[in-house]
Image (cartoon, rainbow, N blue to C red; front, side, top):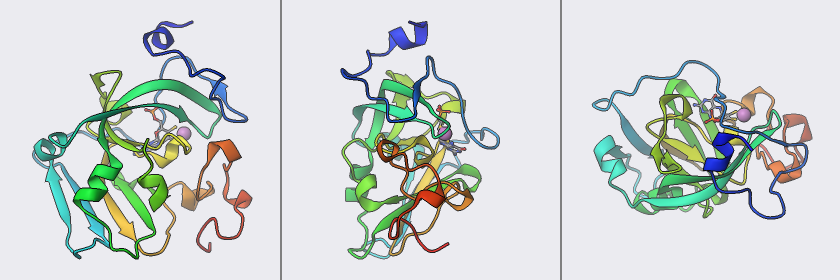
Length: 210
Ligand SMILES: Nc1nc2c(c(=O)[nH]1)N[C@H]1C(S)=C(S)[C@@H](COP(=O)(O)O)O[C@H]1N2
Ligand SMILES: [Mo]
């Protein structure tokens, strides 16, 4: 067992590897494009789109990191077939953000936005799921720049591309729209247990018209 792995907690009993995935030791860095530089004075987290009050809600870095802190033990499943199991993530539950800046009742989906225009769409239920967390920490330590500092989304029950690193905001949607990888051939829902990897696997109703 590698050092990285033994520092984490053991994988949950009965293996939580979804079909077609293999266990990855350590924690590789996987993303498209450059690592953005964090500028605290310019950083803000925005909730916009179909909000209940029609207003945009913003937090600066100090305000966002003062929100209630929780932890979640979760796996990361990369669609390219490796998984990292059982890491503890710390940060702000997505549900907390939703309660503070609620959506219009007609909102059905969210677009999570990150630096350089990276985005991922989620069904509202995926966003409000218990495990979904805006993480600032992993294993009790601040995230490093390449792993998404100062903030990344973790959606434990979906493939990891659904969790943007360097996240900057959430847009509430009244109709689903495809995000960055969802527009580039990846499945609109992305459930690893159902191996929803690619767009061509989508069943009617699982994604907006192409
Ligand atoms: N902003 C941004 N977030 C991203 C990505 C990306 O390209 N850009 N890639 C995703 C993918 S495909 C994976 S597997 C995970 C990898 O996270 P890690 O580098 O911390 O392991 O980040 C996700 N978040
Ligand atoms: Mo990935």
